[in-house]
Image (cartoon, rainbow, N blue to C red; front, side, top):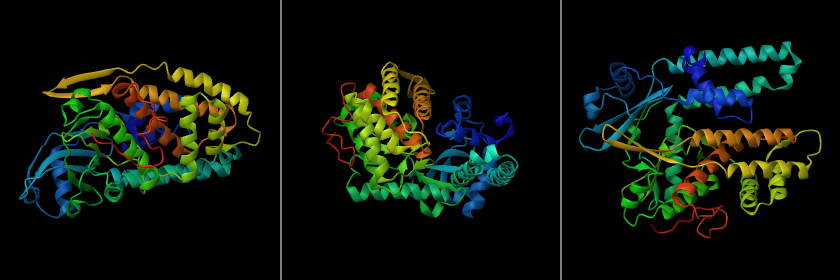
Length: 399
């Protein structure tokens, strides 16, 4: 039904799918289907949007543009191109037509309806439905303004430059003169997914474990060292470049956490390795909002132990496919495994009287992605005990 209702509801479904701290398990699982690619918009329409936004003909800006999109999602479409004059390879991200107006109208209606329901039903009011819808509206409307995403890219670039990390990681350079609310033009990074072992080995001094350590340290350092952190580090958004650097792309989803929250998450990670589930339980209580009753730390710890044992049983399998001469690698069932574990930890928390903020789910999901990458690229690496990994900064090693 949401797919038939269009862009607003597909985005709403995506929000539900990534918010297990807010929505019930069956909704989170069902709306995973909204994360799939959507049908492309005809290139003639895309051309019209770009030309209107930039105020000039496509040929005046680009030497060539691929009419077949590199990617297409519910709100945007991405095309490869070459800049006129410089010959630089770029990608053009274009907001699909009508998306902004549709989102604004639909989300305003949903917000008003939720406020009306709160007035009519005390149960709805206690659930803070209007506040949830208000947060959704703010988050989704920011996604359709590419000036926001461009700002996220700039923040990450400033973090890399200020910490001297450009030698091991990078993000696309922006062509700000061609970046507007509906169009974003940026450098095209050539690379393979971070989970492509062979691609890593072909790089200079290619060592999968060293590359993973650097990716981890750069991302961990950004949690507190950058304005925002990348909150969608699935394999397609982390690239291994020919020079051995890790390329971070697609900053449509970002997060922000406080130092207090991160310290609690750090304690959680360390206790996971040591099997100290009492400490883990106390760390999670620190992160979450507890209900009126006192949390039984002992019971919470026992439930977490059962959950932790189930995580270790998740298999990681590398799947490499070739299409049109291009190889692509994915971790089989990676998203399903990550989402299922995230739902389980939220459920265990709620059963023990702990309600987690949405930012916690975003953060833990990224940590779980890195756990999958560790199993594939560096199965002997201990994220919390290896001296090369700094859980509070951005140290790197030579690859």
